[in-house]
Image 1 (tube, helix red, strand yellow):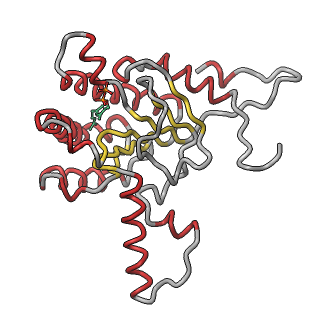
Image 2 (image 1 turned 180 degrees about the horizontal axis):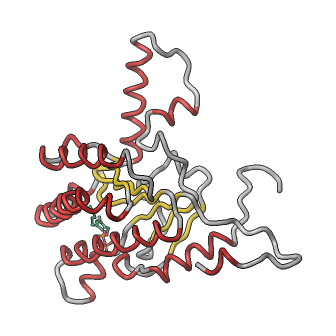
Length: 246
Ligand code: FPP
């Protein structure tokens, strides 16, 4: 990451530094597999491998939070074998995380509604959360059975219960934030979508208010460290004004 060590030369506009929080829509696994004559599930396995690699790279360059979109509330309507393969990948990843989180200095958190997942996966999510408490490295948030609209509806339901119980009577932006999965962490600075589509697909709709976006055609399994460097370089050239005049 030489870019962030470079001295600013006279007249060069202020560079935006390294993002604290990157969010990625891991798209293109199916097309990556099809191009190779493989089943879509092989694309997801390759995508999961790439996710591990990119999470370690984020930790190494000093990204504090990485949020990945692994399975949406709408993805249940995919063929059963594909859904089961992705559930299997999640279970393996969480099992492996029990051992690796401390060694790799990576915290693993789950963002989504766990209710539809197996009791075993739900237990692993809880354990990962407990282990994460005394780890200081990059926090990886895995969005699974996640939908931004579902997240907001759940937040509003919880808030309505607070109001009914007499514990709240006003509602502010900070209150809404408090009931989202991302309550404890800053909003994403950079949202990346590989795979050629330019849309958000129900991902972090509240949190993306001032995020910078980066889209590219590379399929997720091929989105390697060099591709992430390109995204970071593009980000560093953006001027963020947050609605103000610079
Ligand atoms: C979108 O690509 C990808 C998904 C819906 C699944 C992403 C899942 C993984 C990367 C593995 C899961 C990882 C963990 C840790 C649980 P697509 O299938 O829509 O690709 P396509 O647009 O080319 O068909």
